[in-house]
Image (tube, rainbow, N blue to C red; front, side, top):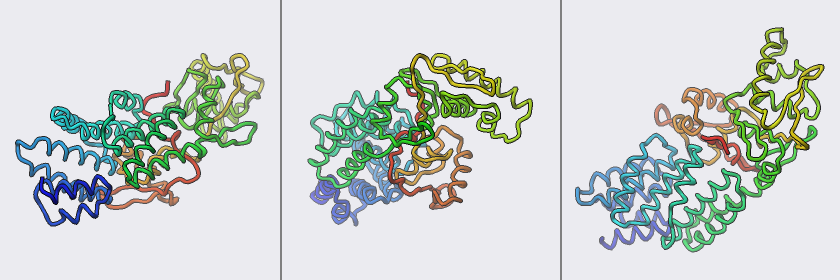
Length: 406
C-alpha cells in the first residue's frame, strides 16, 4: 500500500471524506477507485459511489479476492443507504465467507451488520436479533462497535424493550466518543432523544394521553386488554392476535373498545366497519357473521355479548380495556414512518418493507403527494420518494413488522 492510499484510508476512518479525496481524486487504480467510492458514499453521492466501487471490484485481479470482497461489502452498505433492498443476500454472504477465511474481522463484522440492518428495514426483527446475537465486536474499531450497539438498540426498541435499548445506547455513545466521528455521535443522540418523545396515544374516556415507549411497554405488560391501532392487533399479556390483514374485524373491536364498558348500536358498528351510511338487512346479516368471527378470534382475551341495541365488549376478570392509537392519523402511517428516516426510497423497496404490492404503494404515494406529505425526485426507474422528518414524536411503533409480536 503506497503512502497516498494509506493517507486516504486514515482520513476515511476519521470521517474526513474530502481529505481522502485530495489524496486519490486523480487516480484510477482499483485501490484508489475503492477509496473514492467510499468517500463519495460518505458525502451522500450514492449513485457515483456505487459506480466507483463496482469499477474497483472489476479491476482487482484473480488473486485479490480479499480486496474484491471488501468492495462488495462497501457496495452493499451503499445499497442500504439508497434503500435498494432488491439485491440477493447471497452476494454479501459470499463476500463475508471470504473475509472470515482471510481473518478480516472488521470488514466481516461490517458485512454482518449490513445484513442485520437490511432485515430490520424489512421488518424481520426476530431474524435480525438472532443474527446480531452471534456477533462479537470486541477488539474491533470503536466506530464499528458503536454501529453494532446502535443496531442492538434499534432491535430492542422495535421489540419494545426499552431498558436494554437504553443500555445499548449508553455503550454506543461511549464507542462513538472514542471514534470521534460526528455522524455517529449525532445518530446516537437522535436515538436517545426518541426514547423521550411520544410514541403513541392512549384513548381513555374520550380523551387522548400521549405515551412514551417506556409507558407503552408498561401498558402492554400490565395485563390490560389493549387494542393496538399502531400494529393492528389485540393483546392481553403474552397473547397477541394480529388483525392487520383483517381490517373489518379490527374496526369492530376498536369501536367496541372505545365504548367499553358500554355497548355500541348496530348502525354505528356497520358504519365504522363497512363504511356504509345507510345499512340494510344484508349489512346487518354481514355484521352478525363478522361479530361471530371476532368472538371466536378474541375468545382467549375477551368476550362479545349482544345487547338490546347492539354489542358490547366484555373482559376476563377485572381486566381493563385500553385503545392504543398511533401518533399520527391516517391509513398510510407506516409508509410515512419509513419515509421519515430521511432516506430516498424506491417504490420497490417500500413495497418489500411493507409487504404490499408495488402498485398499492404507488397509489398511496400519489395520494400523499397531492397533500404535500411526500415528494419525488428522479424519473422512471431512478425515481425516489422523500418525506420531511416527522418531528415531535417517534415512529418506532409504526414501522412494519413482518411477523406478529409474540
